[in-house]
Amino acid sequence: MGLSVGVLDHFNIRTRNLSATVRFYEDILGLEKGARPNFAFPGAWMYSEGKAVVHLVDISATDEAQKPDSGVVHHVAFASQGFDGMRQRLQSKGMEFDSRQVPGGDLWQIFVNDPNGVMIELNYEAAKEGGSAAPAERRDDVGAR
Image (cartoon, rainbow, N blue to C red):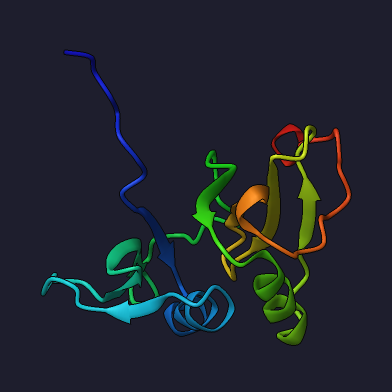
């Protein structure tokens, strides 16, 4: 039997601005705030398709320093659907983002930063995006920055 690490379960963000971070994941990415265990510290869990994929911890009442960006984590990626809809959503919210086509054209991507400087990568299988207009193919990679 082979080994498998599996798929991404969730990522955790420690934030001094819980409300803005919750709003970003709800209003910008379309996640839903949902049930969370009764931990002894404040926070929120954000759900996608019934799964808690982003765990938020509110550190505003502590002396813990807020990291200015995502630290050694460069970005977090989601397998997504609805490329055109997300581009329109980001534009309507006034969010800065970068869209690109991975060389070869099979994968389209959108990159956007959350209020804590965490880069979010949204990946779209080009074949499943129907009549969407493909973004420009780019040879550079956000991971190289």
